[in-house]
Image (spheres, one colour):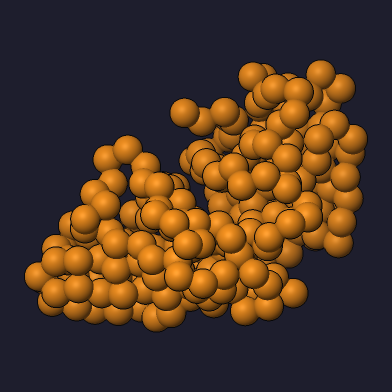
Length: 112
Length: 116
């Protein structure tokens, strides 16, 4: 059963920030929020993960609400190559062997 | 680092034959690998969890005798689709996690299987 809810699709203009929301109202205390993306006909690519603090890396920023029931993935300057399906996944700590369960994700289209 | 190589990237086979897909972790050891299947316009569905040196754990509804998984070393897991039928045509993807530490999962590039 999916633990997350995402909008099925979004559009974003090239060069603008893409903000992808995710609801995970049933997240438990030791569960992390992970984001992956899948470009057409490729394997998923890891983007970022976090527990409760906001995180930033070279690809994106992750903003997690204080109650941890939702989060937003931010691609600061979207390019055409960011067109992909983005998956928000909730699971245990990174060092565990817990499986990743994919929901339906958000299909992000970057418009020139 | 953390590269997973999947081979072949695509394969066409005749109905009734078997196809083997390889998943290799190139620069790390992977005690656990996962196999997914993805049909067109659908999300990834986990098929099984492959543990080095032991039997794979299959998800509900996945036939273990049809989808044979072998994880004989820390860098290689194979998925064999036996007696393939057209309905087995799909995109098969493996993923692996580096043993130890707070590492995420790395995915292979996938194998497009077409059974004719």
